[in-house]
Length: 134
Length: 134
DNA sequence: CCAATATTGAGAACCATTGTCAAACGCGGC
DNA sequence: GCCGCGTTTGACAATGGTTCTCAATATTGG
Image 1: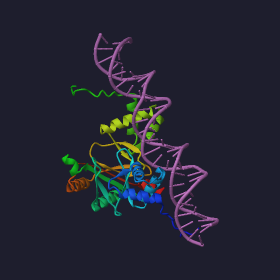
Image 2 (image 1 turned 135 degrees about the vertical axis):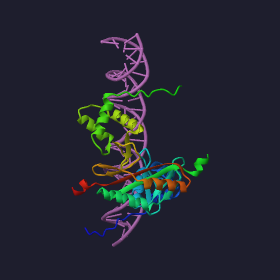
Image 3 (image 1 turned 180 degrees about the vertical axis):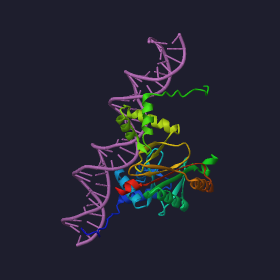
Image 4 (image 1 turned 30 degrees about the vertical axis):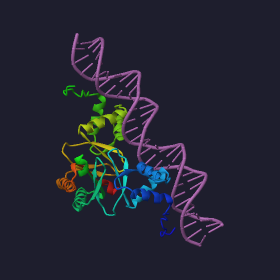
């Protein structure tokens, strides 16, 4: 087989529905919530398909996937640069933040101990201004 | 109710077995692995009890619990100072690292956006030197 | 329109984790 | 030592998120 084969990802109704749902909110949601959202929008997409699509989008770097304290995967569309999140633990409001210094630091720490093929997770949780006043 | 009630935690054979197993390694392990380890040590402790004990120890701050990339909980006894981890995703070998700069950075970012009552998670995953050669 | 290939969906399968509840245990008092 | 009581345990069921299976369906290039 020649190595020039295209992935051949097809733009289907289901994938459009997931993308549309993702565009409808800007905080992190579980796959099941996203599935419900799609249903409420009138579309019908299987839960397995939602999972498959979200995973694919995450691999493609078009959505962020992280895990809440219960280990559940939660998802959100994101910008395409590397970044982290400042998340309100009361309302879920999210701010994307960048920290070049942190990236550099993690790389240095890893190198110092001889670790290769590095990845890291960094999330900040707190109470946002809006939730503070109430 | 007076607030002077004692938790009444009893030092049982099972809890000792879990503590002993935790002392036997210094990398992160899943609850099931710890359960296996205990069996291999000759003790017999129910899996549910292992979970209960690990959760209690984590609440007491005597062990760290974090989640690997699959969302599984992994555990390890820890020092009592604030720190993060550099974890080998192949064998689990762990290095505790400190990063005052990072602590400061997260605080600054949070303040900048008006977030209060901050906490953060930061873990670094990679392949350790030993696993690299094989 | 056709054949080839990618995609979907319904439900089963997985599997880590938690709940249930009667039996066993550790403790303090006697 | 022995009792009684509240704590803890363990076997197993139940939960719940996520993935797998595979036949049916949709899309695409020709």
